[in-house]
Length: 426
Image 1 (cartoon, rainbow, N blue to C red):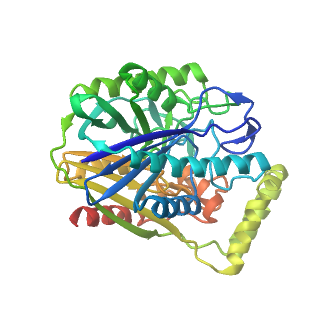
Image 2: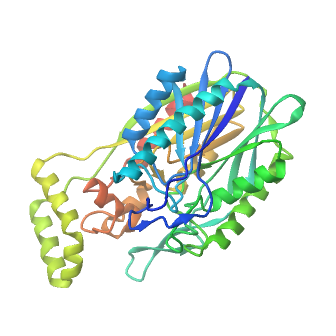
Image 3: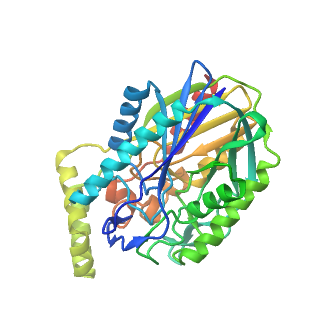
């Protein structure tokens, strides 16, 4: 086995729009990076790319993966976005001249990082482990009317660990540490207009400073669809505390990682279409408009563009579709990296951990394309009471309705789990 790593600075200029495009960067708190880990067994090569940005569209990721293949010949490319809300993303990104130039820098940096990591390959051994740690809480809580609101739910699902892959070279020195944890980096969100990586940046800094010797630490986002870093919107100090906690847990686990004896990579991929609910009828749409106008004209004006988008979709009569990509990178029965697109709920990572036939399994969400949240069937069954991440029309503040003009339907969970099992079976 050979491995190579590289990192490139992709910090955007000031005046760049952050996260939800309502704030502009007023300066830099800490730099953002794209980091690449290339694994090569002599026959199969995989590039794992971790990016300190909010998200990446399918269009962006497809283009970058194609360009990586053209430049390096690497066909298995996994682009994971950290989801930091103190940085821009590449979904619906505005094209102000300085922002467009920055996006071009990001594209070049991704290509250069993978190419450099590939060129830097040296003999290496891989070691896996799991660090018990929790830095967030489930953010879905039912109010007195049974409607899901965003608040701390201490009894709901979380992923209380970080999965770790340690890359060692001759002499036992650490070359790279890839670690995955499921929590939205929103501890800073809206409390500052400075650009930064939120808690993942502090975790990476802790690991790299402690290990020294040019070690590259890489944070990858897990299934964080319903998990917020804690405490929400509380500032850089709290983000640092959470990041140091995560970093220390990873460092502790590095003392007991188990060597992966298998020396061959196997990659399996599948693309499925997730089921969506039928678009509302024009009568239902008109009833919603009337209700909003009578209850709150301001709310109606705020949602007018969204309503018009739904109307146009109804008039076209097109049933929305949602692409969902799954990849599995496997080494014998000892290790598997399973990646999913979009923002799956934590329950998916818990299920993978329970059902996985591998000794160690890492799970990435937010990989190779993101449009919306992917809830469980139980949460989708709640219809318009499903809240921001799982709600259905006429709950217009639902992310699903806003993006798809409808919502995912029951059967989503079964489709995803069936697809994952089919990859493992191969």
